[in-house]
Length: 122
Image (cartoon, rainbow, N blue to C red; front, side, top):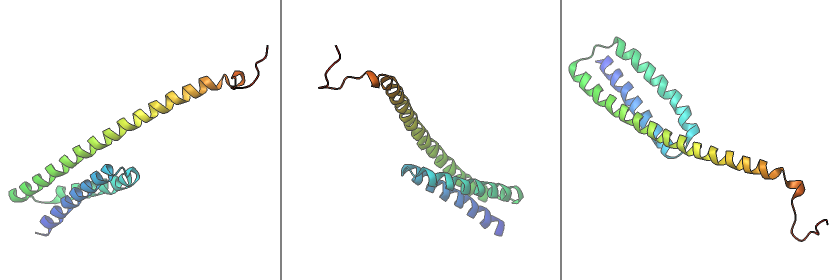
């Protein structure tokens, strides 16, 4: 019975962490998300060890299967949010690169630039 409670608690912790990670991604708190990911991975590793030594009844397997499906759904949503962020960053990097090229190109002509109102050499 204690193994049952420990395992159920471990799965619940993973589910809760995955929900918190989604909330952090939705709030664009990427640094906190990365920190929580370390805790999440540790919880998954701990749970995997518990599963390896526990005897699972059919009833417990059903409960854990539902928890696992919720966790997988959360991971899918988290991956979608992270891909969305990667796409945003890709656009920003592209804009930055284009701006850098423009600045570099026009920066070459700064000594030849004409200022309005200055007399021009003849």
